[in-house]
Image (cartoon, rainbow, N blue to C red; front, side, top):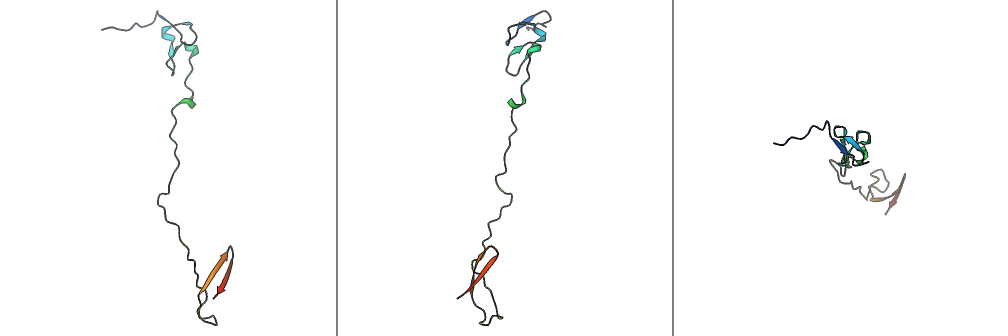
Amino acid sequence: MAKHATGKNSYAISDRSGFRYRYQDMRREWTGALVGKDEFEPKHPQLGPFKEVSDAESLFNPRPDRVEPQTVFVGGASFPQGLRDTKGVASTGIVTVVTA
């Protein structure tokens, strides 16, 4: 069974600069390059795997829109003519009563 050398007397060439370093002082970068201890650069955090960020796309318990009635009955026995069907035509804050 073959064993690897310990590297205490061996040298290696840096992939970045081409300088000779002791083999035990070499570092392997995230790019796979074998560089000297003083040339080593760690991976920048912006290059790392990103967390998956997702926005909520729907409500948990949605309800349908409420449909407001178009015809509003106004009046009653207190009107002189008695109960009459009326239509309400409205804008913000103002209600106009139209009798037929």
